[in-house]
Image (cartoon, rainbow, N blue to C red; front, side, top):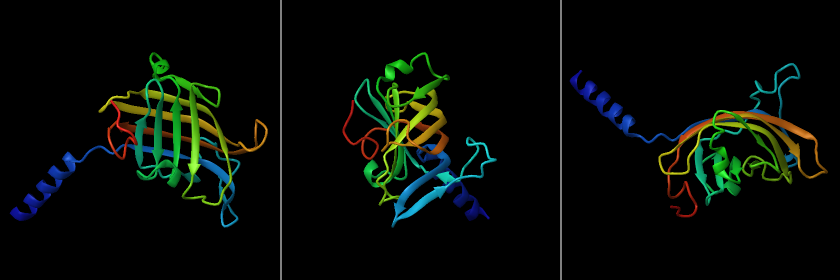
Length: 196
């Protein structure tokens, strides 16, 4: 009994010291023609399901970081810490992070011509796809910083995924939504280049 209690206490102490890796989800519906071996990715919900409640597609993100050189900041949400071009992930590029000040808690537009742009990569899941995605919608930042230990937290309210290979606006391929909550860490693998 005493030994079991000591083992339980040591496990709890170890878990308490573990670094917060961050949590988040990027889910929704998505269709990608020619995803893998000429097979399409078809992760859609029934037409009766609200697009913002659909979870047929799950990016499976478990790695979160912010990198860039001020005033640009890039949030990476992806599977594992590999380079973005080798995994599946979502990037949120903030052209001028200073513009987020005073806008925390309010929806911010996302699009090719906005301060926040988004990019979706499915390099592991769809290695044969030649798809170019164009994303637009809204994201809400509840906390944001670029310094070590800063909280980065928000909601992906809605990101419409369109075929970017055709004239704008391209065909709608899906709708994504989600959330993210992590503490910024510095150094590899969180930043590819040493920052301040």
